[in-house]
Image (cartoon, rainbow, N blue to C red; front, top):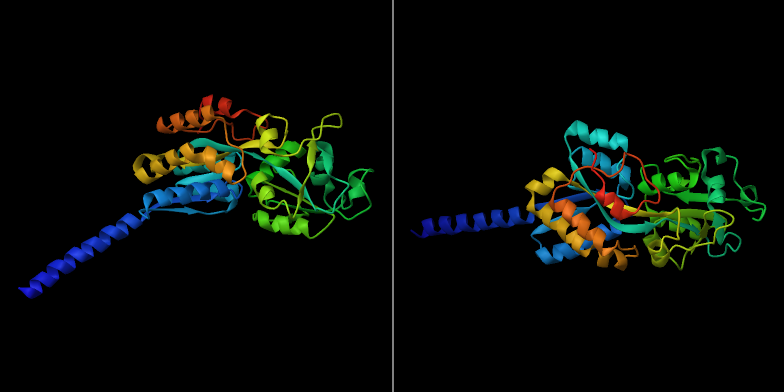
Length: 333
């Protein structure tokens, strides 16, 4: 009799352990943009606190392009993206039957940074940036003097995101005029902290990344004020200049892409995304980004609940577009 009790209690304990393990194995898998990472990570932390360990949210940083590769193979539930999904990525998802919901979550301001001791390039035009970064500059524009006569005769060292980065795609589109069109002889890294270190150690260095990383590292690097052309005012990146539309052309919306099937079949994914959209305004500001208008979050939540699939873009970045307009567009898969 005692032996049977032990077996019975043991079975109950084992069932309890299995139940606990199953509860702990509810996972929301996310990967993608290092730019979107700080917001998603902040949301994930708050959501996991709310769920008291019953749901685990994993957030990777393989870059926007790397994240879409995993997403279109069905390896993740959500993909962080600092630019819209591209045509070849749309095709990759089509081939594997992955349908997605595109949701803007915040605004970012691409920030061009220089060494704090650099006192000659505190303002730059888009044309000067293009002269530095266009493919024709490779192996040629290696000195500040070659960019402009107003700059000193000093070696020019460049750092920026790698080719898998959505920040790289958007910057090249906005500055050079064509996505992915860039010189290749620069220090490339998907880790923005590596770029910060590179620029902070060399007075002749220049790099770029998202506003949040600049906000975190104001003591190590200095932001360049951007002029659209010679006759435009020089505008610094900030929450105010992004909101009032004066920081152009380097302001952009950033996104999460949700696997539609995962959202329909996994309650934890659906609940996490709804929590994300309800808290993105507060948490994006906390980590140094610019929140969208309240109406945009309402529209995004409505689109998500309606399972509005596809992208508002044609597979290419759209510089300067308003987020409310994006949310109203027909989705393309």
